Image (cartoon, rainbow, N blue to C red):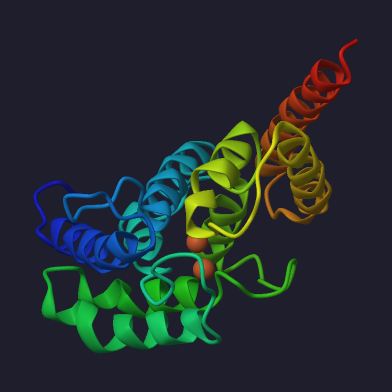
Length: 214
Ligand SMILES: [Fe+2]
Ligand SMILES: [Fe+2]
């Protein structure tokens, strides 16, 4: 796979798209950005997808292309309607201009299009789409989700922060994320999700103790 150019092209493309929006949301005084949420998300989806692929198999080219293309119409925090469909249409129209294997483009478009489909709706034959779905949701669980919660906050300067507010937000985040655990397609994802949630629970428990002064 490393002999192909397409992976560099799609990575650079996403770095550019997300980098431009990141400069507006998280600017540094010298015109750069100090955080790029979407790029961090996609990098983590790749890590989780590679981990899951080692256990469950799947076509690496289809999965990695889908990882890097799935959120290209959602460059930062705002979730435009249809971002999955727009990205899938982009794949159908443009991925063929790279050296990506033509016969796999339809499967990439399918995985991209369905990455935000309702839980448990993908058939077993759509293995790569299932794998992207799981990896995309797994990245939202665990200690990194708290780190992310804090890292994005300068995008909301009107939101007053305090340790109490951090704990309140962390509890909300945890309650929301916990609902995902049973929805994964692969048992390995469910195990990893449960592990990440347990780490989050311990983190919240300790923070609550600390700010209660006990
Ligand atoms: Fe998405
Ligand atoms: Fe995503």
